[in-house]
Length: 316
Image (cartoon, rainbow, N blue to C red; front, top):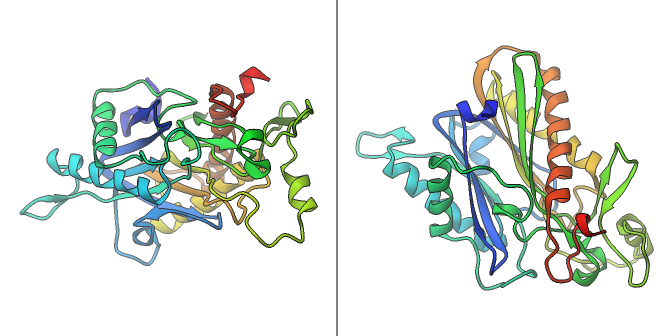
């Protein structure tokens, strides 16, 4: 059992026909939360409540979903499931769960008219409470992910969802990231791009930055509909303000693994959840969080499977 499972439950709903899905991270007792949105085209739910100056003290769930704006409907299923299990703020008449979320664009792969909905969110919660084994690649929010879309879907590659845990003595940080970027995925250890934009008839991959520069006078969207979304969990104890700062710094993991990152056409969003179990330095947690995000991106990409024209890393 991984460390995060003592405090968090993760469940996934996957629709392999429509090529979409959602991933939920649940924390029954409520934890301190933060969020940072760096991309220019986000789709989010209830992120204002996580601002440091606002009253939201605890978070009970995070929903990561496909389906673009339509996929935010999955949050309603998560809220309903948690209320039925008496998880949330006890208001006397009922329990109100604090559930935040973000969605990514996957409508060009599979079926555009089927998106994660109320039932998808609810079923993902059921899987979480059934101790579903987390699966990498084409599962949950990673089902319809793609990378390197700037040169069109026929020249893009398959993305996916990844999970990675970093440890230092008693401290741990776990990142879950759905990799759906307009840019390319870069592996520092290999010193090269492992998935991204392709050109017909060429073996090389990873043209995204070059294509952005080539089209520098083009003010129209080169290829919109992307977004990297994720959630970082830790046993560290921080204030809400520090959690928001940690979410902000965790985006460095995206910047190290995606080229280019945080574009106008991505809605890159990261949530952070702290279980408030140990006191530790902020810098130590941020170092682990950045690397956990980077590694989760690589794992999600390497585990993805080819779908249609979206070639996977494993098939290069």
